[in-house]
Length: 77
Image (cartoon, rainbow, N blue to C red):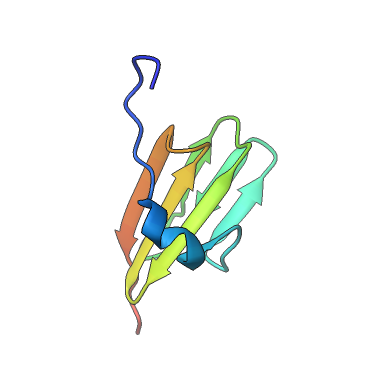
């Protein structure tokens, strides 16, 4: 869109999307993703819309309609 590559969930995934998740914590300047790392992954930037998809051991986070996308495998230990 507008010359920018975006990664967004397919329309069929809409019922599975959530606006929050225990592993995703909004911060003043973005959000952090705590999963399989000692240090959480930090996204710094404007977050107007946050869509989260958890499907079994997979966690995907879509920022602002796909401007940024993060995917990870959740360690279920």
